[in-house]
Image (cartoon, rainbow, N blue to C red; front, side, top):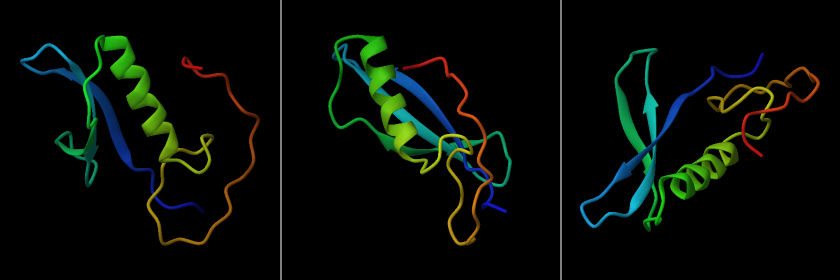
Length: 89
């Protein structure tokens, strides 16, 4: 069995200068409280550009997108399932 799924949320903030920054937030112990995990180092001119860039980073946190980002430490092989189409390219 793979490690426990990590609860990560993606959001976009707009700073005072008008640029948009993606932010990844993580929740611990199945709570609804989230803490910042990562943030864009540079701003983007539009919301959608920041959102897409953050999504790329979020996808990069998973070795296998079929099971999502998991806690490390458990040596297990995930069952292979057909790749599902997602809402983003």
